Length: 233
Image (cartoon, rainbow, N blue to C red):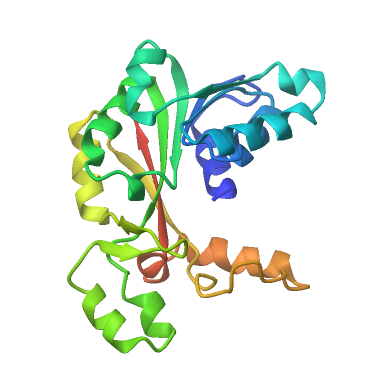
């Protein structure tokens, strides 16, 4: 996903430009720190106090120049209008968040308002068109059968969450003024790997395969996750 995001950033903004990035639901700060290391000014918004603490601890271990480029705010992603003015950011990330939001449209509209004209909105969502793949490959036939007719599922944390269909999000992004520019699949072949499994010796080849599959039909359509990139008009 990071490679996909970098591809979109390089293709949209001049090389060397320091971008204003908002990471909504930043988690432990993986993408925020990566982009700060690349020279961008990053604001992370996260409502989970434990994740905020982890992100701040990670940030504390970075060189001063990188620490100065990152601001972490504890808050709800649905309240971006409380913290920021419209058009304040060149790039807005919202990765792994929508599945926990029962009504995502207001959140998405708020994110789009944060973008400056020509700004990039990056979403990572559970693929609602491929929910039967994981149980099917695991031999859970009743689970696979039930997954065809729903966008609800139970994740690996045991939480009941929701997925999004590409067609629906495409329509939503057009309606909020940040129409879909590109989309990718994420975790096409590796979704059934056990949590905590050691990376294979040829991990670079694995990543190359996943990256290729994530941009190639029909493989990307059955990925566990979808990475959608919208552009503010």
